[in-house]
Image (cartoon, rainbow, N blue to C red; front, side, top):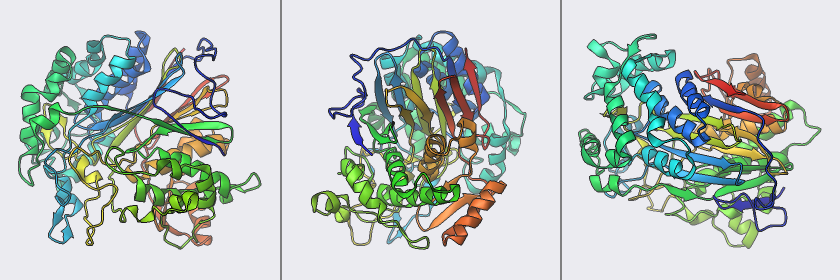
Length: 572
């Protein structure tokens, strides 16, 4: 197992085992067509339209996500944030653009504390203090300036048209509304209540829903650029919504104006002669490299499938414990990332495999590699991300690729509504509890800090540097497990794209192992893990939203997660 870090603009390394230098590599003409996999047919069709016009994968991504914000508002939208991983095939470059939400300048470390007790999630979720500065619009523009081919305003037209003419409410959107009426402000907050509950009745499957306010917001941004969003009356409306009761937030006009997209390094690790390349913190992409390396040490060619599943479970338990303890915003906290991903440390970490009924704890890469402990650098983390996210994977007609995961955090974000879109509740992705002893937490709240995210958009390349896999998923803290399942499934279990996505979801973070038992395969896996002594929590539907594309010698093999409403479309 080899490892290397790649800067976000280069798919090469100073090491001898680097991928072929893009300056000398001959790039063949791409002959495999184009493909889009995303969580809603309207979004996929918008992306395909951009590709038909000759657009870059980034153009298609922006168009698709603008539509997702309309038809799948419970998962993501322009009031939230995203991580964007881009592969430029001609230049043989990978880029990671961080459009994660940012904490306002006025936040405090203890803003979710009520005396010595931490505020309950429901109360924190439905508050103004839960809202961070949205990053998606700025991310669109930053990525388009670097990669886009089509005119900026063209990208907005499918979403504007659909918002004006109306779309049919999908089963998944309609399914959320009755429960959300009971537990959230979705049916009470100004604007949003009338939109989702006209005449105080929840939208039903098949209802035609027009969103003129969203069309107007997008029209402004398409003509005026991000300034229309981060300044002026839209920005003022965002601030007013954040500063409303209950628990008014501190987000200000200055916070909006100061938001910037950050270009971060891409991290890559070798796994059986291929390279897993993914996003660095504050994302949890590093967990993909850790899980794959640990799995490699814990399994063997002679292992049965049941043994391999157990190895996959234990690789998760080890990697999650390290991720939870050490990851945060790299601009704000010290993360021993190189050491955590170092092959020597991961080989040692695999020897710390926990007994099935034992509580996993983090390792100490500093002690292993340098005889200088870093285990006490941070106090124990208590972050628990909720599932309100979407993922899309795209390869364009020139072989450029995008893996993008976007979110508003919990379902329907904070449920606060501005200009036809929902604002995020991303501040609850920080560790809300302040340790009684006052010790720092890697993912603690601080001004201008970006909360740690489980989002892990990832690509895999072969030994020649050719693209093999584009993958990613929503799912809160389950995302690293969902994504790792597709990588291990394709690379070791011999599964095609759809089979890898369909395979039983198994999440092993902490003491319990959650297993989806909606299929006989899942029931069998749960039973076997119980026999091995694991504390198994049987689940009726682990709702991943995996959207992946596998590149084969014969063409593109794509998959959309049947647990959601997505589709795959191709262009020859």
